[in-house]
Image (cartoon, rainbow, N blue to C red):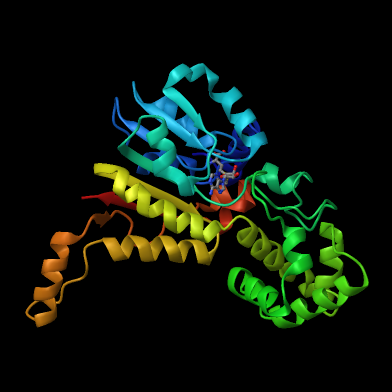
Amino acid sequence: MTKPSEKVSSLKTKLREHDYHIPVLAEEAVEALDLRAGATYVDATLGGGGYAELILERLHDGRLYGFDTDPQAMTYATERLKRFGNRFTLVAENFSHLKEALTANHVTSINGIVYDLGVSSRQLDTTSVGLSYRFDAPLDMRLDPRLRRNAADIISTASIEELKTIFGTFGEEPMSGRIARWIVEERKKKPIRTTFDLAKVAVQGIREDKRNATLSRIFQALRIKVNDELGSLERSLEQALELLEKNGRIVVVSYHSLEDRIVKDFFFAHAKPKVETGSLESLKQSIDEEKAQLKLITKKPIVASEEEVAANPRARSAKMRVAEKK
Ligand SMILES: C[S@@+](CC[C@H](N)C(=O)[O-])C[C@H]1O[C@@H](n2cnc3c(N)ncnc32)[C@H](O)[C@@H]1O
């Protein structure tokens, strides 16, 4: 029998083959799509093309459309997937424009869609757009270079109230008010232009051992705001539901509670409600049932195995939810 430590090390070796990004829950997500020969699928978050490659390898005759807006990701994934010829099409668009972008490609219905939300390891570990407080870089954070407002614009113009709301809502940061005030005080003295400028001011009055956690929350919050990540997800899920054929699946892997809440609420709102038999409520709900458009495939989210988390710590926070069009 293979020991867990051997499993972890063989997983690590396998994963290192593509060090652009180590895909999380890839097997589980592709399995959950329930691929059918000749059908049409969407990878809403192409990244390094890890999921996409697995889908195309397992999909006979079918087609895959892969969305991303990050130029580096698109170049890398296109090269990786070129052996699949015209079975793969790159769509250089935000997934919030799902319907419009697919229509432009003459696709009006799909058989499944997968989202692997957030950013890739490559985006976090390179200094190009300043997503991480661990590297000094211009405070940009745009995953799509076409966006007009970057993180430095927000940090230099937002009011204390606005900054507090951003950190509180998108980062669930308990010190959001104080940090917002420090930023506004600091920028009166000198502009905050880089990740290190922001990191220095954001944790000035915070205990040493709490600083990294605070910075993670602040940087996550700003990134979500700059890229309108939650709004994009909400708009995209609506369109996905509209585009899905009967029995088509929506698979979403999320990495923080705000994303997971949106997915969960969306799935539950469109899925069969729980019925308490015999009550007047049950009559109403059985009528609602007729209208339900989704069936929940996962009642509780799927999480990564201990082995996967040991090989890839990013998998620790991943939660996968799946629903099927009725
Ligand atoms: C976690 S990575 C995906 C990794 C991919 N599953 C793989 O196996 O390589 C997320 C990717 O989605 C992209 N992304 C994030 N939000 C997006 C959006 N709203 N529209 C299109 N792409 C998006 C990011 O640029 C990033 O490349």
